[in-house]
Length: 208
Image (cartoon, rainbow, N blue to C red; front, side, top):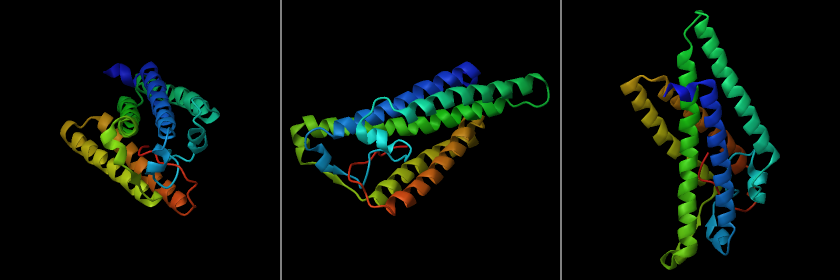
């Protein structure tokens, strides 16, 4: 398991998880745009909650400038940070190996939370399109409710990480706990900004 919080391991994790997050978001947005589904699923705005990627997702761009920039930035910063922690530990100045594991936990836990929601959305949208019994299903939420529900899902993850920290004491879950707290705070800020701005009209990513 130590490989995952090595410089190479965390770099690979970032590339895989960030790509999965972005591509699944695009897949969900494109699927939602098919047929009448866009009218049946309304959540007060874009399927993407992160303002950084809203425009690219609304256009259904499989590759965007911001995606490539964030992908390259993470692929550089995460391995460099872990390499620095390893170097300090090897010099005997301090044992920072726990920081590397915590960083890995922060990355895996938060991305898992988002990716799992994308998979749920894809399954739901496909059922609404292809299963006759689901033709009567429609979803309509205002943006504030979407943001509240998304934060609530993250609170469930917070509780899990908190219990895992108490039981195992592993930095991995402590990092996941801290990062999820940060994500909840970001969702709160995004929600205040987006709810106070008139919705542009599409759906919502029940994730990030």
